[in-house]
Every structure is written in C-alpha cells, then in structure tokens.
Length: 276
Image (cartoon, rainbow, N blue to C red; front, top):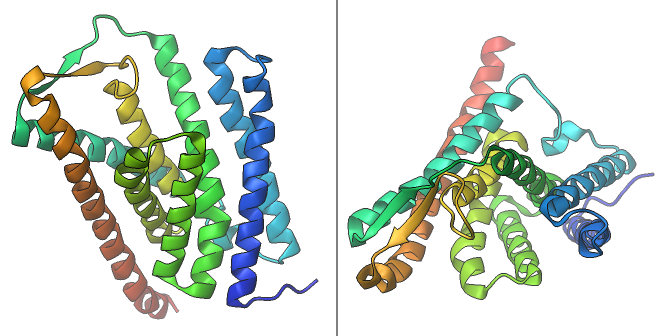
C-alpha cells in the first residue's frame, strides 16, 4: 500500500501517532493508578510498558509505510552506546552548569551532601529515568520529528514537536511556569540532539541526564547525592534568576548541537566523494 507523502498527510499521520501515544500512556498507567503494582515501581512499570508499546507501534507504522527504522534513527549502530553516554554527560552538565551559574550570580545557594546514600533508591531511579526518557523520546523525537522534518522542514518540525511535547506535560499537571521555562526549551535541545546525531541514543541519554541531575540534587524531593539549600535572603532572587539562566544555557547547548549538525551535514557530501 502506497501512502501519500505530502505535507498535510505527514502532519495527519503524526497527529494520529500522538493520539495513539496518549492512548498507550493512559492504558499503561492503569496498573500504577489502580494499585496493581507497588507505588515505588509504578513509574518504572509505566515507562517500560509504554516504551515497549510505542516501539511496537512505531515499527508497525514504518512497515506499513515501507520505511526502515534507520529512516527515523531507530537502528542500533556501533556508535549508539557512546552517543547515549555522551548525551547523558551533556544532560548532567547542563543542569549542573545552571546551578553553578546561579550560585555565582546570586550567591546563597549551596549543595549539601546527603548523610547516607541509598543504593536501592538510586538503582531504581536510574532504571525509571531511562524508561521514562525512552518513552518520551520514542513519542516525539522518533517517528514524529523525522517524518515532519522530511515534509515541512527542519525548524517548523522542531516547533510542532516542541509544542506537542509541552502540551503533554501540561496534561500531566505540570505548571505553566515549569513548561515554559523548562520543558519547552528542553524540547528543542532534545530535538536538536536527535537530528544532529542522526538517532535516538543521544536524545535519550540527554533527556535522562537532565532528569538524573534533577534527582541527584533533590529538585523535586530528597536528593540522591545532594540537596540544594538556599539562604532565606537569596530565595526570591534565585527563583527569578534560575529560570532565565536555565533557558540561556539550554539555548546555548541547542545552538552548539545545531552548529554540529550543520558541520556534519555540510561535510557529508565531501566524505562520500572521498570514499567513492
């Protein structure tokens, strides 16, 4: 069966994919929401189940459209693990750099080491973070992004995917402030990582790295390794400065990946000529 390949057809197919994505997430959350699994492993179960279902859905769609997993960066290659590890390192560094910048500009912010590490909590957190990052990258930077880029262009595709990514987090119950200052800029960063690296390994690692750093520093609950402590007099200033510096650092990282993408794209024809 031949599928239409026009712009609006691509947008419609991606929209249908996202409807299926939301349905998968709802169904996969039933065991967690009804207490069929322990609360501590509920997010892990949700991420693993959703990721497996999204992978199966993506492969089915690609088969129907007579496309290869390589067309959307879903194939495993020799460089996948190094790119995943690089993405994880960049994600952790991006978050840690913002903490350092805020502490330098405002002062009154420090990281306090936790008195005792909990290996089981850290191990479960690592697995859960990987599962959830894989779930969201399969849902946005896999089939949807690569399908839209090929039909409507690089930046329009990035915008549509980033807005859809932000909307899902609003549906999760995230605040508008967190979505505008955190989720939306990160969506462009993850998308650029996918397009610059040519696959999903790096954006999964990058996504995972950012979330790991948040957990390590205790942004939303008790930290794995440290807890951020702010002096009372600096709290209001930190709240104002941190979102701005966070966006600035994320934009700089995105531009660095864009430059890498441009360099590798421009050198690709020369590389092919030299090996032909």
